[in-house]
Structures are given as structure tokens and as C-alpha cells.
Length: 407
Image (tube, rainbow, N blue to C red):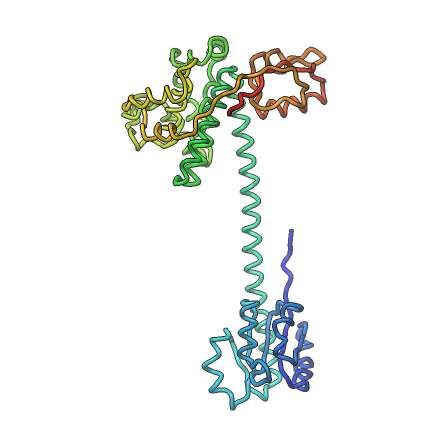
């Protein structure tokens, strides 16, 4: 942990060498690092080479720069430095009007009293360091808070990825839908710079977790989804309300209240119909994330063969009771892409990547099954494979369908 280091540097600027010597003699017993400068025109270079100083004294009447000019220079370079003007009685009236200009906090008159100078040095060095330590502690607190925030963000991101992968493990179609919906949702968010950072974050988490509830359904229901496809979700009353389960799981987690609300209302129609029926929200009172997910999930489900993309959106746009048509217009503004033909290949373990689909069961040399055929590789799965190979080598090469690429 960094520790605060006191600054006990004191500078006196005067063109009279005997006064500089006298000042050094007075202050050397004050546990201060004493500096002196006889040429006021060199103040800028001196500050750069030896500063910052806790306290700077400057005589007023000097050739080159006068005291007010010197202390003004000190203020511009080191605004926290305590600044004291030393002036003769004859100059007092002329100097009073210029004191604020240099941010001068005190002045003493010549000839000075030795005890007065000692007390001023002790007092101002102490005041400077009290304030400097306060700033240091505040900066340390800010730095630690930022470090903790980064750590928490990294932890949250990692947990969300794992939960997303858990949902994807229900079946190949679920994993594929997760990737497609998330990708298109992120494209929409890029077109919405007007939304707040908090709302953007919440929608991104909802795009990762909208199928989370599927991973907590009874095993028999999960088996049917894996065997018969995601179309069964809307036909099975237990599976159909999986979003309510996900919302329940997330609602009490700090920072995830908004994410839970998005998932809670993501199956609501734009006119307010749909589960949960006790919630009366409709239209733009529904969370933006809920309206986006309703469109994207239906878009993904309705896209079949040549009837997909823009054709589906144009048909959905006519269903004003179901969807926020302004959001559909934004989707129609997304540059259309053309999917290349998906290819298959046999690859070594180290070349497998997120989005590839296994076309064979993944087993180790020792016969342990790691992943099933038709599983879509997730980030967590890829990390698992890289680590598992150090324990029990995985049979390689692996037969996979490559990622869908776009023109």
C-alpha cells in the first residue's frame, strides 16, 4: 500500500544574499528542507527542477520579477503551495492591492522578527501537509474503489458468462438462439447512443440471460427441448414461463434488479397482454430491453428457410398489438447480411472456438464424455477443454461445423 510522504520543502526568493543566509539559519532547525534563489527571473526553471514546495517566501522589491509576479508563477505551477510575500513598510500600500492576484495567503514586513518567521514556517508547512494528506487519502480511496469496481465487473461478467453457458447447455438450438439474439441485440444497442450506460448494461445482461430459466426446468422438460427443439417451449406450459423463473432467480442479486424486470416482462405484448398478467405495464412503459427481446426471440423463431430476416420483420411490423414497431423500424435499418455456406472440418482442440457446433461426442482418450454431439461451443466450454486436456487428453481432431460467417 502506498504511504503518504510529507513535503517539507521551503523556498525563499530574494536578491539580497545576506537575507538568504539569514533565512537558512532561521529555518534549518524547523525540520525543513530549505532552498533559496537570488535571481527571481529563474523561478520557473527552479520550480521545475526542485519543486513542488510546501511554502514559498518571496521578497517584493527585486530586479527582474517582483514578489507578486514570482508568487503568481508559483500559483500557476503549484496552486497548493503556501505563498508568503516579504515586503518593506514603504511598499505595503502598493502591495495590498496585488496580494489576491498572486493567491498570497500571508505577508510579513521587513525587518522580520525571527520567531515570527519560525512560527509561520512551522504553521504553513503543517497546513500544507494536512491538506496534501487529505488529497492523498481521497485519491487512494478513489483508486481502490476503481480497482474494486473493475474486480467486481470482471467477476460479474464471468458469472454471467457461466450462467449463459449453463442455459446454452440445454440444447444445440438453445445455444444457437442465444448467440443469434445476443448478436442482433448488440447491433441494435449500437444504434441507440441515447440510452443511459446503466440501461445499456442491463439490456446486455438480459441478452446473455434470457434463456437462463430453461436450465432450471425439470430434467424431462430439458430433455424434450434438446430432443424436439426450442419450438416445444411455447407448447409446454412449464417451459413457456421459463422467463419468470429467470427473473425470480435474479431479482434479489444487487445490480440485477433491472435485468430481472426485463426478463420478467419480455413475453408481454406491446398492448399489455401476456404473462405475468398481474403486471399491467404496456406500450413504452414496458422496459426497452423487454420490447427488444420480444421482437428478437420471435424473429428468430419465425425465420425459416427463405422466409427470414427482413421478410419476417415486415410481417411482424403489421402486428402493432404485439410489438413496438418503432424498434422494428430500427432493426430494418440494420445493414442486411448474407450468410455464407456453413462448412465442416476436423480440427485440433487448440483451434476450436466459440460458436462452432460439435458433430460428434467429445470424449477423452480415457473414454470420459465431455460434451455431447450437436453442442454449440461456448467461451466456458472452450476454457474447459483447454484445461481438461492437461488431466485426460481429448481425442483429436474434432469434427465440427464452423461458425456462421457473414458478408
